[in-house]
Length: 167
Ligand SMILES: CC(C)(COP(=O)(O)OP(=O)(O)OC[C@H]1O[C@@H](n2cnc3c(N)ncnc32)[C@H](O)[C@@H]1OP(=O)(O)O)[C@@H](O)C(=O)NCCC(=O)NCCS
Image (cartoon, rainbow, N blue to C red; front, side, top):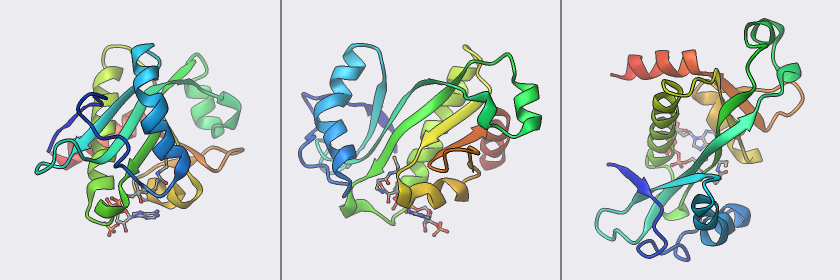
């Protein structure tokens, strides 16, 4: 399996339905526009039999780090850091849920962010989770920020360690 950049001329964005309107709508309306402006990148996992169908997608960008919402130890360690890598959105089409694609897509997103961090260093990966997905991210090692439970983080050092362990 491999993710590719969203291509509005190839991928049927209207077919995709993860059950969350805001995420469906982002993919349909915003994702290509935002990529064209170099604000975000959206990667999709295609159905091998029907490549125009999107099994799932994620969107990556950078975001400011709110140091005050970090545990004291990390706040001190990263006090000169300003930005983190952001998994702004991640969703699986309802027809493909509970088959391991969400986990696979999350690992793929973390690999891309880890690779990016080796060139333009940043100490944290941050995710904006919809309410029902907070437990999903906790399961994979993310910790909620003190003040915003639906915003979670993982240090890039922890990402590196867990990806190495997967090899
Ligand atoms: C959350 C989501 C990405 C999970 O995708 P999925 O393909 O169904 O998940 P997987 O099959 O890869 O599940 C991997 C593991 O996470 C667990 N899991 C899946 N969804 C979960 C959730 N919402 N909460 C807690 N755990 C969850 C599974 O039980 C599985 O655990 P196991 O290996 O111990 O059985 C998907 O349900 C989704 O797109 N939801 C709607 C959109 C959304 O909320 N996106 C995230 C916020 S932007």
